Length: 314
Length: 264
Image 1 (cartoon, rainbow over the protein chains, first blue to last red):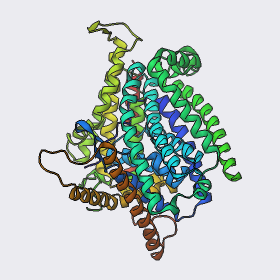
Image 2 (image 1 turned 180 degrees about the vertical axis):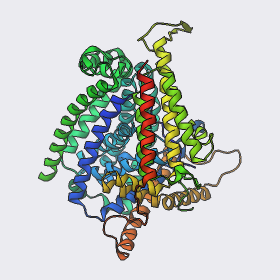
Image 3 (image 1 turned 45 degrees about the vertical axis):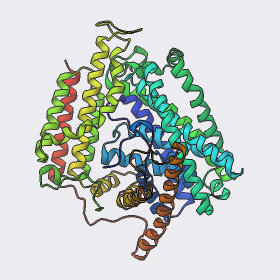
Image 4 (image 1 turned 90 degrees about the vertical axis):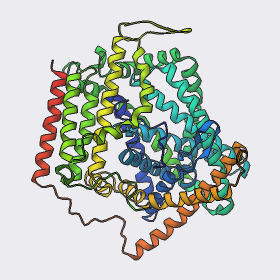
């Protein structure tokens, strides 16, 4: 078929169990929030719309354009979906897209699907919508520019997050994977940004009613701005640190204890990360992963709550 | 384009084809999970897992090479994992000098690399087998029965249902662009890169509007036919005795794999 795999879909086996579980937890939390949020604010009419929109993202990935040297740029779509449909609906749409890519085309694994949805659906929606929401009242030029910037940063953040997950699973060396992934996706991201801007400009010209300020405010509150800006800054600051000074990042991870869970599990687990009763088995690794996941879960619930309450204010 | 243009389901009649989709989904996920839990370098357990996969392959009557052929999709990611060979945790095996870079493969790294490769290779083949023996709509209903949120399964069902319609739409747009892109042989066609990206972006916007407006019509048509918020199926989806016994057998195999992997 014409649907060629994008280089961000991690297959099964490339992430270890702990990393997979942690990102499943994060994804389940965010998707759960998205479901309850869309159930509250939207009717059953919205479900066929989101389904067809997911099919649209899928089909739009076929529309490629020639770049130099026989390669072609094409489209991931997370940022555009979040800007046009609102962030929660965007997350659900991208979840469906990633799930079908994995189930139907084996483009990305099943056990690692949580990580894939996190990278390509949640990060892109947070960054794409968050930045766009910040300038939604400004004039057209600024909005389009920020949408393009958001699409580029979202692509880079997805690539960075993919590299970090691979590194935490000790599948790859940080000093090689980060520059390689970011280098490739800096170009892919430019294509993504150009297409997103052009598509938005086209929609604004033909159906401006779909992109009104009230609609953006209704689908996501000011909390999204903070979340989007915060994650963008994190990605922008982390990327040069990871590619230019991998030892530095490794040091931070070591201090935080990530590396012990990530690097050695499940092969060789440090004593402090095993549960004495269970010994050095996979079970205790899973348990260590669960603890990490619960911490992350708490953090995400806090973020989600702040997003939610600020939504009700506006 | 046909409605099932994207489905990898192969019409056959076999034990695996007849199994309830829920059993197949649960066993596939459990198999992938089992591979992930196995420690690095447990070659014997990987071999047993491969035998289980071959057995399932044989029972499905799709031919032993079917899943093998489609497993190459993970190849681009192997490139990423190659660097694991030079993991600093482990004893150096050799020292390679490439210009000003020195690469030191270690025993830990080599074991890790091949374990990742085998895990991924086994897992992707089981997933290929799952979609090869289960029609995609059945797969969606299986997920619904396994208590996945209905909103999500319904979105996925719509995605699958309209994928071919919108793919046709996308192909029409591509054909239209091709028809308008005249060029002389030997001369460069089209404008600068930014211009080409702008054209593609307009096509994406156009596809979006067509999809958006189509979804409105779809919803109205479905309401007219009595849509109440979820999709129904004529398939009763009842687990019979064969389904249960195959489930138990599969879990027995997985426990065996784990025992081989952890007990030495």
